Amino acid sequence: MVSKTKRIVSIVLTSLIGVMLVIGGVMKILRAEPESILDQLAKYGYIDYLPYIGVGSLLAGGLLLYPKTSNVGFLLGSCYFAGATALEISGKQPLVAPVLIMILWIGMFLRNKEMFVNSGK
Image (cartoon, rainbow, N blue to C red; front, side, top):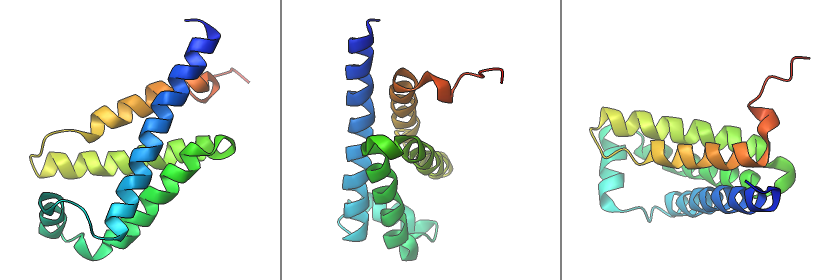
């Protein structure tokens, strides 16, 4: 793939996930999530921690969107989606988070391969 095309694809993919994290964080802070999500979180005892989960999502998305901190945002976003995957699996919900984490990883791999490849140093 041409370097310019890789850059554009990586920016689109990581920005898409970053914006989703930011929007999801705001929705959690404002408790504007769909009722099914709130019910699922309440079922597992996470409803009281909703604002903290929202701040974590907002932080991960913001760091991912800012180029100088995108590596940290990538790690935090990966952790966020890993937790969401665990909740989806335990609740027998449709697996959406693994798809989002794959998009995030592909976007970051295209942007910064050095994060994934052993340099041998």
